[in-house]
Image (cartoon, rainbow over all chains, first blue to last red; front, top):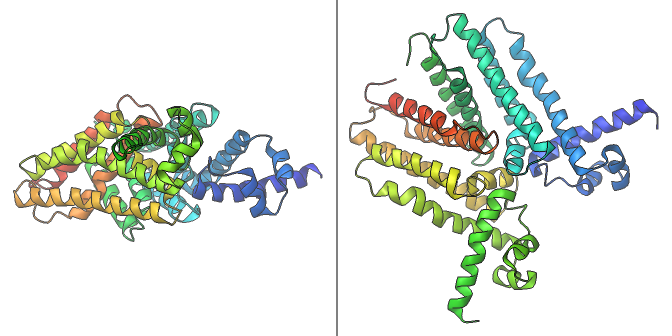
Length: 200
Length: 200
């Protein structure tokens, strides 16, 4: 197999594994079930990753690529902090609600790995902090631009933003609530209003 | 084994299984690992439940008993809707943050089973609806008592309340954020303020 062909196969495997992991979890995903789905041999699939942990980390990296494309980059392209925050919200609900077969990979993985120390947990904690920092950074821009009040606590804002997304994910995925998105949108608009220069 | 002795053994197994399930998940929990922890034989343990799915449902029932004692009953004992809501918030953070070894059982199970149709998922969806209805009911009392504004959307309030709890759980369990509780408390006070008669 040429290196280019190997890379392509690896990417195909990871795209399938990513979708499967959002449904059955990173721990629930077995090399055997993935091989069956892809029509590959278990040993062939194993040769690409070497261990279940390495596969899990590669799936998370693939998730990050999607997340960058769907959530982060569109927000970065916008001119103001407030516009970026709205784009982050819309991007995240699209990522979790539509793009991933079983909802946000990181939400599923966080619950699986929060009590399992090791490199996968470390990677998830790091991504969690990066995500909150990114939200906080956009909020800081919005403050500097006069859209948010001067005494806004950005860490609190980022925490509240993330809580709204988790509420959306739970309402949509578990409860199948058809109003998950409008409810999350109303909560988000309330958060923006409370952060606004008019004050709470 | 007498029926009383059998019941007691079953309860001991379920208490241990409940704590273990909050750490490794309901799917991650195997009858083998549970037997090892309890010093029982796999076949003996299996005899108590008959199937992994029956064990999972019994663990959820045990979780519900704890949840009733820690979260629901203290709130029911209070005289006003607003006091009940504060007790629900405090009780839930105690339940998830301290009482369960690995955080809220239902949050973990929801992520595991949101894409797995069957009786366990049905049980979890039912509990989710009951929980949101209970919050909404307390909010309705607070409205009738004049503590919340007359046009408050109780379903939205319950959704937002639940989102705050999910944010707490994620911050505490994955990120190990020492400020998880104060952040959730500030979000909760903001929710109460926005629902208040003074309006948002």
